[in-house]
Structures are given as structure tokens and as C-alpha cells.
Image (cartoon, rainbow, N blue to C red):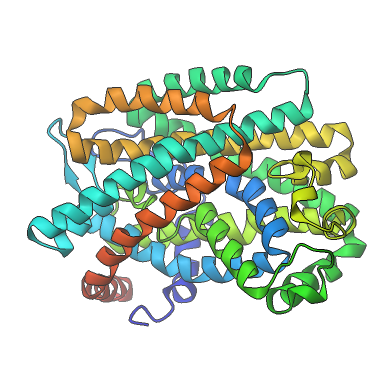
Length: 434
């Protein structure tokens, strides 16, 4: 409440600093950081991944259409949370022994809690994010990429897709911050526009189902059994659980991941990057996730192929995860739709691999120093390869567990520094009045 609904009050400011600007391209990243838009692009690269396709589909199956409503609620409050995270990331950023700017929750947690407890809490967060995103999370991304391509081309073995992902990943990791920033800055706008256009076309093709699909999201949020038959047994608690969990995995607000990118932005005041960070959550959930959900709902797949089933155990493997949006696009575009989703997912998931590698690397440097980053890069490449061959349900379960663990120390840090953020926000408002 101290921020007076910053996600509404400062939304226009954030938009004008990003997509509302005539020029989005920044100077090349260096050891002093990157441009504000490059930081946002790196954050969006991490945010817009499998959570927007496979995650939204999983939420729809496990939590019903109402899960999308709870994803929206989560994202609305998440925009304020990420404003705080990004502002604090900027406030407490520092430099490594080799002169590179670095920042993130580990640094503001140690500022929030002095002494041994602060160091312990920061180390705990660093360990959790390395496991949650750098290792387990990147297995989800490569798993979804391989699943999408195997659905499109059954003759391809998942391990071959994993090998290609691992090789490209290694190439980008070796290039460091400069290559990561350059890659995300160029790819993110293109991949987003490509997917948005395709989704809008499908929704227009099924426009007669759009009003009922939107109504379904709200109805099922509070009365799932009114729209879901069979033995799936979805209740309000389940709709909320999967909506919030998949929303967190998708937009990452509160997880403490994207502040690592926002901390590196070259801005005049910490809150400048805070308002920019909000746009990432808005774009991720209110645009991309919503489009995915409407593509699936307007195509009637859930109503005709999932909800009549007597048990969730009977859901075909081909319709789990990314298979559901692929089927929706296939119904609209034919076989090209399957390929379309596979290509989109490759870019979504691969840019997330790059973003999550970077977030984990920042924490490896915090725990073990700069030299340990090379060993970490090798391990991440190995997990990318491994993830391409695993079962969907197992991978998602592991990620949900570690995501929940990393949220706890991050939120403790945010709560302890809420007064600092209030002061920063007042400064920012005063500067804008001048």
C-alpha cells in the first residue's frame, strides 16, 4: 500500500520507457552494465518461456479455465513486487573482482539482514536459484523444446534436439554478458511479434467462441464444477493453486530472478528500472499467457477432448504440456500449426535458457567467485542435454519445488527493505515533478 498501486500509477511511465519509445536499441553491453531495454529484454527472455505455452496449458488442464484468472491476479500484484525487486537490485548493485557490475537478491538480502543471518539467507537464496533455474528450470525448457519438435517430427529423437540446444547454449554462454544482451535484444521483439500475430489469427478464426471463452475463465475461477464435468475433480483451491504456481513460473515476480538483469541497467535512479520491470510481467502474463489460453479455449479442445474424461490419468501424453497449444494451432493452421508452435517454443524456451543461465551465473559468482562461472556453464549445458529426454510431469514437479524454496528468502529481503523502497519511490516522484 505504501507504493499506492504503483502498477497502475506508473504503468504509463514504464510503457513510455520501453515499447512506447521510438528507439529501443541500446549501446553494447560492457562490464559497467547494459541499457535499460537490454535489461528488460534479458528479463523478458527469461520470463517468456515454456510457462507461456506449456505452463498455461498445464494450468488449464489441472486447474481449469479459472486458473487463468488467478494467473492474472498473481501478475497484477506481481507487477508491484517486481518493481520493488528491480529497484532494490539497482540500489544494492556492486562490482566483482574483475570490475563487472553485479546485483540481485543475494546482495539486497545481505543489506537487509546484517551479520551471519543475512549471509546465510543470501547463500540459501543463491543455492536455490542455481538449482531452480540454472539446473532444474533449464531442463524444463529443453524438455519442452524436444517435446514440441518430436510432436511435429516423430522421427526425430529427443536426444538429438537436446544436443543442438546444448551446442547453441554453449556458444552463447562463452560470449558472456555482451553476447547475452545482444542476443536477447534482437530475438525477444521478433519472437514475441511472431507469436502474437499467429495467436490473434487463430482467435479470429474462432471468433464465435471468444465471448464464451472469456466468460468461462471468470465462471470457472469461482465455480469450476459448473463448467468442468467428468472425474477431473477440479475445485476453486486447485484453480488458484495451479493459476498462482504457473503464474509464478511464467512471470517470475517474487522469485528474485529478474532483478539480476535489472540491476545491470544504466539508469539515473533505481525506480526508473523498477517501472520498466513491471512491463515485463504485464507482457508475459496479460499478453502472451492470455493469448495462449484464448487460443486453446476458443478451439474447444478442452471441452471436447479433456473435460469429458473420467480421470486425469486418461489424458493422452500428446495433449500434455506443449501438446495442447500445438493441437489448437493444428486445428487452425493444419500441420503448419504444429511446426509454428515448435519454432515459437524453441525461441521462447531457448531465450529463457540464456536468461536463466545468466541469473544462475550471477549467484555462482556471489558464492564462489568469478572463476567458478566456467564450471557452472559446463554443468548447465549438461542439464540442458539431460532435460530433453525426461518425462514432463517429473520435470515440472522438481521445478515447482525449487521455485517455492527460492521465493522465501527473497520475500524476507523485500519485507525488511520495504521502508527503503518507499524512500526511493518518493525520491523518484519528486524527480519527475521537477
